[in-house]
Amino acid sequence: MALADRLQFLSPSLSLIHFRKSNSINIHPLCSLHYDSSFTSYSSPFTEKHSIQRYQRDQWLYKNQLEQITSCSFPPDSHLNRENNIALQLPELKKLLQVLREKRESEGCSKGKYGPGNVFLVGTGPGDPELLTLKAVRVIQSADLLLYDRLVSNDVLDLIGPDARLLYVGKTAGYHSRTQEEIHELLLSFAEAGATVVRLKGGDPLVFGRGGEEMDFLQQQGIQVKVIPGITAASGIAAELGIPLTQRGVANSVKFLTGHARKGGTDPLFVAENAADPDSTLVVYMGLSTFPSLSLKLLHHGLPPYTPTVAVERGTTPQQRTVFAELKDLAQQITSAQLISPTLIIIGKVVALSPLWSISLKETSSLVEAK
Image 1 (cartoon, rainbow, N blue to C red):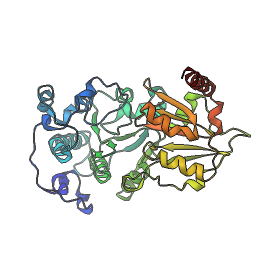
Image 2: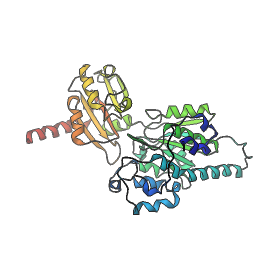
Image 3: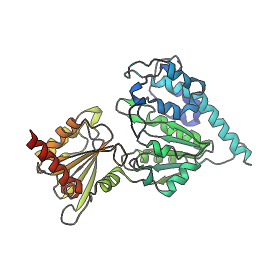
């Protein structure tokens, strides 16, 4: 059955979207979903794919199937039946839509005559819940439905109201729980039902968060969207480490770069020649896989090999890990430390202004002497 056919109840506008065709599927109980049991002991501040915490948080979508998790064996995390997971969720999504419509009608609105609900794109910052704005907290606590990404921290999700519903729509390399088109349709469908819908995004929703695409889609459908900014990872993590992103006489500009590659390759999307400016600070988002290529290109285009750099994994959370190194050494140091996503990379002379820079140099020197 085509994906569009299985989701058609969500919105009349679904017919305008061309989804990929898929083979017919058989709906299996939740225990057939791929689940990595290591996540029960793995301490992450975020929602890792297929973790049991995700299904517990979103248990309203699965009803009586959740208890089967503890008694089922899960196959290796390599061939997740994404569509099977969506099919399991559809009945409860449909019920929620009906409940929300009836709620609006019971509040005195004539059937079919009320306007759409509110959609908020909310930035939740880099992970520390205390970095949320007061406005973000107020909106989160008033939502009917919250669609959240992987990099919305667990502590932030604990702030939702008692009657709110959570729906995970996160993406990681090799696994998208929902396509971007499906996210658009979910936002539209629940807004049309009169719900207060909150789209939760890590960092700032309009900085490498595809918030602009969602806002544009909804506005074209006549849905008003309100954006609540968040502290982007560059600002939050730099502040955590005591790094000024700009400094008179040191860095007169700052550039935010995406480390994403075309079609999953190892070369970053941007041109390194334009980024190799010793008087600017470079901040690379989502750049773990492409950084070895990027660093070589930056060196080739003239950025000094001794340029101070830092890579920060899961910044501003209790699980934060940090690697300081000169540009020529950072790729190897990242590999040695086995940093994982999300990791932010800051490149530039301002990194040396962090009080942690001199400490890291002393530690490196001590390790060399010990050898």
